[in-house]
Image (cartoon, rainbow, N blue to C red; front, side, top):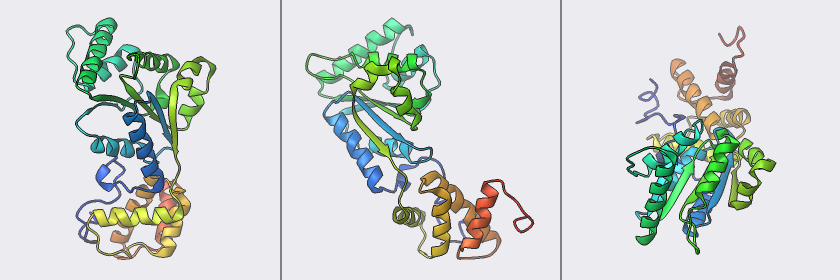
Length: 274
């Protein structure tokens, strides 16, 4: 609705995980580097955590775009699965064909696939997003997948991605064996104030904006105050602010407009906001 008004080619603040809009803050670059290192060195288990909306899924998709043809991947987005459903999802995402979808057959075919990839000097990576939703029994099943190995190296690199609750879950006594196998851990912290400003400017530029002054300095301060540097929250308030600016016929977003949007986002209405 507001694209033409601000001379934008596409919406700059969608909440979908689009790698094209990825703003590589120091934290995001480090997260990708940690994952690349773990994969290249065949470290087995890696753990990436971050608050809701910190950019974990976007970082994972950016990683997938950077891996070469010698790295085969499976990306599981749904952690609310049964044991057999998870194994089936992994098999299907790797493109493995099985005649019967029982546990033994799927595990045998997975092991065969991993050995074939090793023969071709390929690496195999399994990324499980929202891993904090996996039940302890499922996490234990994932640990058992790491037993598929040769005497010298891991056949399968597993990246567990989730909210901070994942760390708490892995700290439990029943998952001690899995916790001890995690070779690399990285937590994606929120953006700093300077990074948040850069993030907003970057997304506007990618969307085709030539006007760097759409958001006034005091508006940027309010955006950071509300979002705490969480990219998803930045997207939500910026998108709503642009819509508000459009309806008010304002080319520049100020702090008053952002405050109004924040109240509406939080469900706080008064006579001045209606």
